[in-house]
Structures are given as structure tokens and as C-alpha cells.
Length: 313
Image (cartoon, rainbow, N blue to C red; front, side):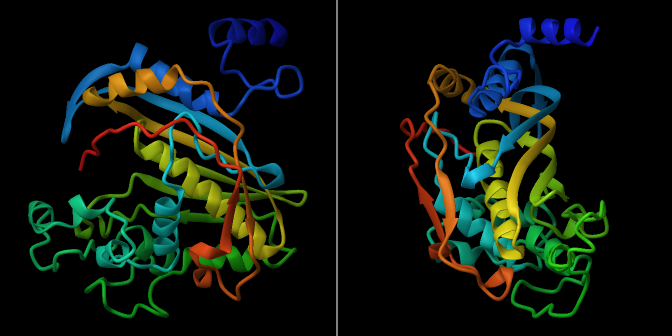
């Protein structure tokens, strides 16, 4: 019965089922399958920021062994921009000006005066995003005042607690190594409620695995960044605590492609992936928040050209 079920699945999705010991496939085909699935079977839904083809529920597994970094190759991914945002999260920062000073503009639309006012955040200065990801990762539910305030010792340092547990071999098997960005108590104080809401780390043998649940998945622009970001985070945490990176597992809730992204993605879906690059580190810092962009060395990143698509706020 199991063999028949696997045969039926392979027949329906022959390009996308992962039989690594029988017929190895490039992990990027999972993303291309998601694009095809949403485009072919999604329902057009009119939402807050436009019309989007939508399906509910999808998962992908990305192998991180031997330093593998799943930067999509069927289009160019601005991995340094992604990394700068990740380090901003890790440091608990919520000031968009910190990113702008590094030529990172991905939060600009949500940090504008007009957008903040539309969220009722009239007391926030322009650029103050409220208690978004970094605040919840490092100071969960600490009373938020401004992005310049010092929250040291306030709230719950979820990411710090996970790293501390992973540094202790007796705690590495815990099933409670969870970091949540979703805080109902402070959602209305955020410029944008978190899309990637919960991560869980698990250790099997000497390998660190990270599972992410993402409630809202912008397949064209958000998901490639999320894959890269959490894969880099998994590699970083593994490196810092003396483990090997295992897998990044990406669970998606609402998967959508905006109507003006369908044509560019159709072009991308026709491209053949190149081998993924690898990631290594220059050394080990004393704390996770002390790592810098230059500590990350990406080798062998080859990709097809970038594809221009406008981001929805």
C-alpha cells in the first residue's frame, strides 16, 4: 500500500517528490513546484494589498549539509541585503534607519509616515516600526516605547534562551527550543504583523534542524528571502554552538502570488537551477548579536539574472 501511494504521488508530482536515495533532485525544484501549484490551482483572492492567486498549505525541506546554502539560483537573490536584515533581527533592532544606513530598503514602505499613520501608529516617528521581529526574538512582550530605548533585561530573550540551551549538551534534545514572533498583546503596535511567525530548533545526532511556520507567504519576493534568511540563521546558530547544520524545513500557511507577479514567475519557472552555493564563517564571536556581514563567506553562488517585481506593502 505504501509503495502504491508513493507511486501515485510520484506520478502526480514527478518533478517535485524528494527521493534522495533513489533519484536525487535539486531542492530548488520544490520552490518552482510551489510557483506552479499556486499559479495553476490557486484561487484569485482580493485582499488588503491587491489580487493574488492563493492556496493554503505547503512545505519544503532544504538540505544544509556540508555548508549548503539554499539561495535560489533561478533568479538572483540579494543575499547580503537578506543577511543585514537577519542581523538586525538578531540584535533586537526595530529602527528602519539602521537598515537604510546599510542601503537596505525592504522596510521603507512600512516605515513611512503614511503607512504608520494608516496603522494608527501616529506616535511613532518615521522609521520606528514598533515591536516587530527583533523585539519579540530578544525582548518578547517587553513594554515598547521607542526604537531607541534600551530593552536590556526586559521581556523574554527567546533566541538567547535557545542558544544557551543548545550550548548545553544535556538540553539539546529539548522539544521546547521555540522562538515566536507572533505576540497578540503587541500586534497592534507593530507596523506590520509578522509573516514568519514561529521557528523551532531540533537536534538529531550532531545536526541542528530548523522548522519555520510562516502564516503569510509572498511566493515571488518574500519566500526566497525567508528561505535564505532562516537557512543562514540555522548555519549561524549551528556554527556558534558547535553543531552541524542539518535541514531547514519551511511550512507555509497562506501561499499567494500577486497578479502582477504571475508573468515574471512563469519566466523563472522555466529556468534550470544551478548548484547551490556554500556558506562558511571567518571565526566565532562571543555572542550571536556580535556577528557582522563580513563574518559570512558565500562561495560559488551562480544564478540566472534578477527578475524585476514590485513589492506589495
